Amino acid sequence: MKRVFLLIAVVLGLVATKVNAQQNPNRNKNENLIKVTEDVKPIKFGVRVGASLTDWQGDMMNSAQDLIELSDGAVVRKMKEGIHAGAYISIPVGPGFEIEPGLQYSQKGAKMIGKLPFEETEFLNAAVTITNKAEYLELPVLAKLYIGEGFHIFAGPQVAYLISNKIQAQAGALGFNVLNREWDMKSGFREFDLSLVGGVGYQFSNGFNISAGYDHGLETIDKNGNFETYNRAFKASVGFSF
Image 1 (cartoon, one colour):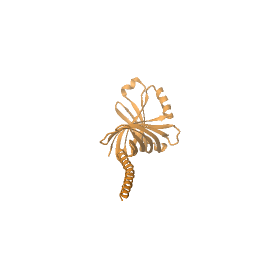
Image 2 (cartoon, helix red, strand yellow):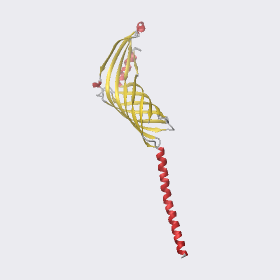
Image 3 (tube, helix red, strand yellow):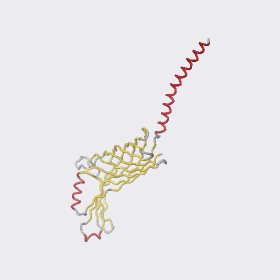
């Protein structure tokens, strides 16, 4: 009888050891799963607003630049100031990595200023400014990679729809405006633009964030692609995630 009890005790001991060995891996897996879950941030919504400097680049603008150089400073190109604002969703897909789709309003275009090329007329401060004022609704889909605590880099494609496009002509002298007119020029421009977006940013622990990026247009601004000219934009933004 003692041998039977001893045999049962040995068998129970082996079974308990095996069960414990099977439970430990599961516990480790659960602990690892909890750790990974803690590392991955929750989905967040956010808003963003900022300033932009935009221009056109390409064959048409290169030809225009050649003419500008011949004007001996009478005509100059300047980057057009604008704003952008919208909302976004930050979707974590792994530790330190997020996908961020967004929707925003953005002003783009180009500017050229001409002055009288005579020293005798400099006191008049006479100038003519021609500005292309384009308004887009942009849909960027960005991949964000965090490097360190809050610093991150981002890149991705962006599709934009042209809401409005106007040409503005302004002329003045001695501080007075003598001409200020706008013309609707949307019909000759491409409705949908495709860009590559990239930049850097910093996310603070309180939800506040800052970023600086660059939009590189891939589609010609004109509908038929005759001018080989593309949108370019530098953007600086502030935002808040919640």
